[in-house]
Structures are given as C-alpha cells and as structure tokens.
Image (cartoon, rainbow, N blue to C red; front, side, top):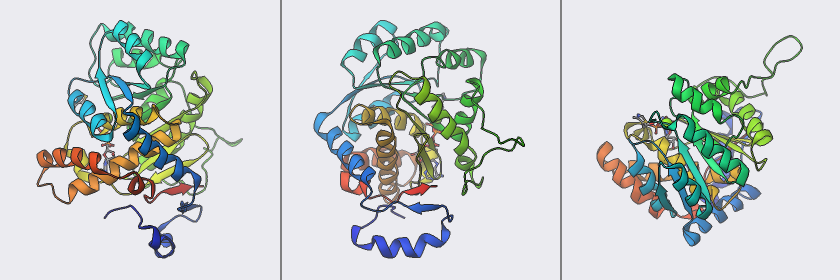
Length: 315
Ligand SMILES: Nc1ncnc2c1ncn2[C@@H]1O[C@H](COP(=O)(O)OP(=O)(O)OP(=O)(O)O)[C@@H](O)[C@H]1O
Ligand SMILES: Cc1ncsc1CCO
Ligand SMILES: [Mg+2]
C-alpha cells in the first residue's frame, strides 16, 4: 500500500483509519507546518545538490553514495582523518557508520568527532552492531562527549548505544519507568521508543549545536527530537533483503541535514525511503531488481508526495 495521501481524501482516510490508532496518537493533518518544512527540504536537496561526506562500512559504501546521488545530493567517501577534516569544510553535513572497522580507527574516529564538535559541524551516526566487540564499543564511547546531530539506527542498536552512553529511562518515585500514554511494546521499534526520546534529549544537551533527532528504522519508523515523536507507516519489507538499506538511509539523512534542521532531515529522509521502496516493490522481481528500482524511485519521487505522506504523531 502506498502511504502517501491524495490531498482530497485526507479527512475520509483519517476517519476510517483512526480506529487502529491509539487514543493518544493521531494522524498529522495536511496543514501541519512540519510538512512544509519537509517539502522545502526535498526541493532544496534537488536544487542545491548538497555534499554530505561519509566514513562508512566497506559492505555498502557504493549503495550509500548512489542513494545520496539518487536522492538529489552528492557524495564523497573517505577513511583518512585529515581528508575528512578537509572535506568537512565543504560538506553541509557528514556521516559516520561503524559497520566495518579497522584497528587504526580506534583513535581516529574519536578525533574526527572532536573536530566536528569544535567546528559545530553537523553529522549523522549509524552505530551499526552497537554492543558488539570491544573496539567498536570503545569507539562509540569516545563519541559520548562529542555526540552527533542525528543518530539513525535500528531498534536494538538504539538501545545498545543508550547502554554504552549510560542513558537510562526516567523512573517515577516508585521506580516505575515513565511511559507516555500510547507507548506499548508491540514491535521492535516500539520497544526503543523511550530510549530514542532519551537519546535525542542527550544529543541535544551534549552536542555542539544543541539541536538533534533520533531515527529508528523498522516496519514503522520512529522519528523524535526528544519533544515531538512521529511514526511513519509503510515502506517495503524487501528493504531487509538488500544489504545497506539502513546504511544508505543514514547517508541520505546526512544529505537532508545539509539543508534542514535535524527533525525535518530525519523525517524527510525516512519518508523519501518509504515512498521509494513502495514504488520499487510494485515492479521488482527480487532483491537484485528491487535495489535498482529503489534507486530509480528515489530519483523520481516528488517532494509533494514525500511531504503528504501518512505520519502518526505520538502524544
Ligand atoms: N518490515 C519492514 N517493512 C517495511 N520497511 C522496512 C521494514 N524493515 C525495515 N524497513 C525499512 O528499511 C530501511 C532500513 O531499515 P532497517 O531497520 O532494515 O535498517 P538496518 O537494520 O540498519 O539495515 P542495514 O544495517 O541492513 O543497512 C528503512 O527505510 C525502513 O523503514
Ligand atoms: C552486512 C554488514 N556487515 C557489516 S556492515 C554491514 C552492512 C549492513 O549494516
Ligand atoms: Mg544498519
């Protein structure tokens, strides 16, 4: 099902589907100001072709660069700290993905994060496989004092990163976790909701720009800036059958961060991905053709289609 709303059917579609929504959540109206910010971000990416550089894993580096180009941005990949510092000066945002690491990265990555912090450079972190291996854990720990603008990951990585950074859930006087109404664990992403909110608040408090977002990917993505939390239905499960769907989403999130605030960037990138994967799924015959069709759909997707997507606001 395509989760973009034809503008004329909004009210009928909202009333027929509201039964499946928690009482405390609701579909975002078509005139919500965040939609205009998303549409503007999509248009600006197409107009400005912003550069977002990446330090990313060897498995999916090509898909990351191609997805950034197909979304409208441009790409530069590097593993040298001095390169990354130079390219940072001409990049709108940067992307670090810790999927495949080498021993020399153990100290380099912390130095790069510190440089980004001192320059107030915007960056996205994908903490791939967080919790696995002492070197990766050491590297992720070094980011705690110089955290990124956006963390993009799947649910288990979000929860593991919170553990590494000592971020815990707030409890009341009886020691019970403070759960906002409507937050129930019915899928993987749900189980990371409260961690994602606390993580966004941590980023905001500790990063250089004091503005942040967290994007949790899965069957229904979750995006939060620590105050507002959104769920994005749709997408296509075939995304889990190509390697690098999440990695490349991190790169495209950096592309959007180059032209917009973190919450808008995270929403625009994830919505762009969901609409494109739906379109690709209509014609693909399997994972091989799906990846090709997905890149084409990223390229073809219109800003208005992305901005009018179905969005659930959690309250
Ligand atoms: N079951 C699903 N149905 C629809 N879309 C999905 C599903 N699972 C993941 N996706 C989409 O796939 C993309 C990548 O999310 P995913 O959670 O698989 O990332 P990841 O685990 O970091 O991936 P990887 O590490 O393999 O790159 C997102 O756009 C997400 O919305
Ligand atoms: C398969 C794989 N291994 C290390 S990184 C990566 C890409 C998906 O995260
Ligand atoms: Mg991943």
